[in-house]
Length: 492
Image (cartoon, rainbow, N blue to C red; front, side):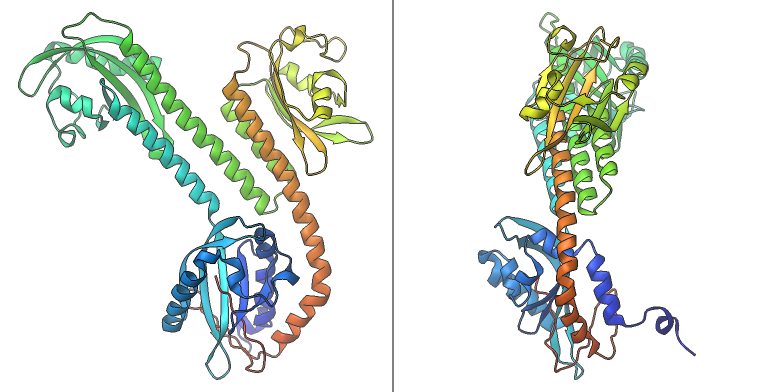
């Protein structure tokens, strides 16, 4: 009676190569001399080498020179002891740049149980590192700004429980930070006459999002009385699971009330807004890059980009137009439509070289124009000139030509500002890279298919001499090979 494995898996070696060939992870097999005898398409794509350039080369080719001795010693010392190594590896591309992988390297053995080589599987974690680094940089910058302020700052949840305070808040009250964090209303330092006023502040923030210029009386730990001017705003940070309020307080005991506290609060709000904007922007670009690497449909990639624009920039129309040679025009491919007018206007193609956007497509230069309806170069379908139009148009450039344009438009004030133009330009760059990468992946896949007609036959013949394979998925992956064959291995 056949087992399930016998019935469905067939030749395990052929299955291994099939899985490796279609894997989005880097897979490299090397022999006992650390020479590469197989690399999957993902490995070729990410390193920039063709398969024939990798075959026969030592795995050290994929390390920076300064890392070669370190990786060799670290990896093979662990392999000799346990047969498996896991860790992060910096892989060098053909052009000299590098990317990071989370790698597993496993030893496999010949029929006599002697080491025959290694199989390595690495997941690209470059984007994960970049996202974590950027978030950390922004968080540290914001924390540094808050700590340097002379005004007291605290963040609390919806119920008023204090989650964070700065040094000024601690000094103003005479309590340590550890004594303040976790305190719930009514706060013991609030004068009894102002407890109801504090409750009103919280209710008003939930309804109106912010309150300013609220006068309160506090009692320090030594019972000294001080008068503070308070401002409070709604604060939501899904990345850190915070949904509550941010509060700023200024000691105005011996000074007249001024607008400085309001300005300080606005500064903090802008900083927090910028952090969230940059985080969302980076997440969208990371998701776009992931879709490209996973060879997603172009429409899905473009939809991710227009969705990113929608989250970050208010607009009435955001669309990616691509060039149609038959019509000699830019025709809509992916659109984010929000108004009846924009839905109707978006149906019309944009003639190459005509109008401001058509000229931008030909020149390859970004156009950022507010009140375009007054510009004599503007072209509109008959009877469809808007009362007001602000737009940003960024050509999408391939390696050899311009293939389309990203257009984001508003039909009402305010006009676009520099920060919004920068966001749109970055997404246009992402769209260009996405389409160019899709094109390159298509070419590499076609070239790989041509190469496989000769190279893959040799590998299959090699594997057909192997009789049986034992698979261990969690602690160890062992591949037994015929001792007369070149051994396999992945170096890192």
